[in-house]
Image (cartoon, rainbow, N blue to C red; front, side, top):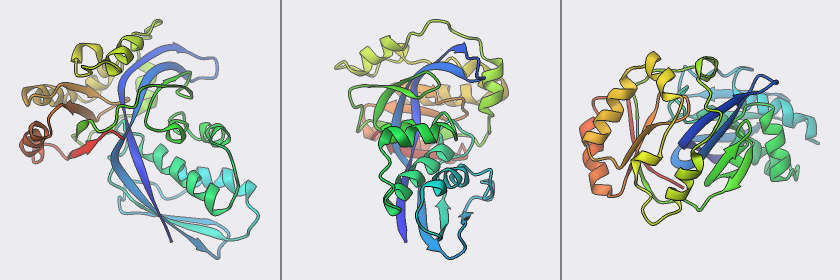
Amino acid sequence: MYKINSYGKINLSLDVISKREDGYHNIDTIMQLIDLKDTLYIEKNNFNSIKISCNNKEVPIDENNLVYKAWNILKEYRKNDYGLNVKIDKKIPIAAGLAGGSSNAAYFMKAVNKLWELNLSKEELQELGKKIGADLPFFFEGATARAEGIGDIFTPIKNFQGINVLIVNNGCKISSEYVYKKIKLSNKSEIEKCINILESENPFRKEYYYNTMTDISGELCPQIYEIIDDLYNLNASVALMSGSGSTVFALYEEEDVLNKAFNNLKNKYEFVYKTKTL
């Protein structure tokens, strides 16, 4: 059995620039890998098919699961006739702006690429992953990166690792598709300013971090604003919604300050996690 860590991501800033002819949107964002993770357990079976199980009953285990879609793509490359059992130990909140499902599919693809000795390059895996979802390519990139296009054109940024992060989610699920339909397009990105701050000696300056999806997601889930206020009242350096929400993350310079905030909020909201950037 293979045990695989499947890490989540946060968006340190996010801008939606324009609508594309293919139905997607051009975005400009800073994606950051975090240590909050699901765990995948992968083993061979004799059924020539994939069987998915998960400890969270809200996660689909049929063809709607992104791991299943990844299997359907990769099985065309294999030189064997056995299937795979995939058990997902889910910790990342779902439909929450942390790309847990995309992460599961991407790390599954990495594992199968090794298991089946497919020898697909990072770029080839990214192209295949893009067929499943716009967030997948980042997980083959990892660490800290500016992502443009649909989120598949990457520019490396100075690694923002080891930063204390508090993840707070009230259980509200938000459809990215709905938010994109309602979003007011920016036409011009301000992400460059945030990158300059991230790469400076003082990255904890909240006025440079932003997410243009917050207004739409906040209408669906007003508690997002309450969480942001709570985090700033608990001395967060930066508090921001990730992706299309509803997860809010906070950056803390000092771990003991983060611990105090965690203890204050752990019984107030459904999901409260201490983690770090990778």
